[in-house]
Image (tube, rainbow, N blue to C red; front, side):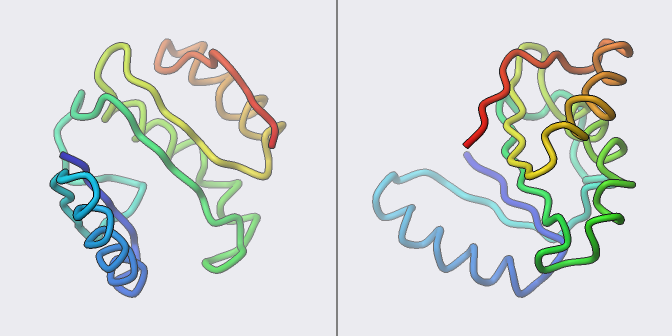
Length: 119
């Protein structure tokens, strides 16, 4: 199964439409819920894979807001990952994420940066 969360109902509506097409192709179950990165209503060690794409002020909030909250969000993603799980983070601020977020998460033993791929 796949779980999809977004803070905005409109974004979930679009994702639901896209998922209907994807489900026809894959047969996978996709569950949607509205929630914030700050504290998702799921138990710890829930996912094998998390894919996130913080908005960076392109549509929601501001670049400074996202930068300020990214560490807390990443801690939440780490909480939700099963041991050995993978977090794929799409970001335009890789230096900030690697230096200011991942560095602290690695020191805490929460996540390990195995690879960084610019695209």
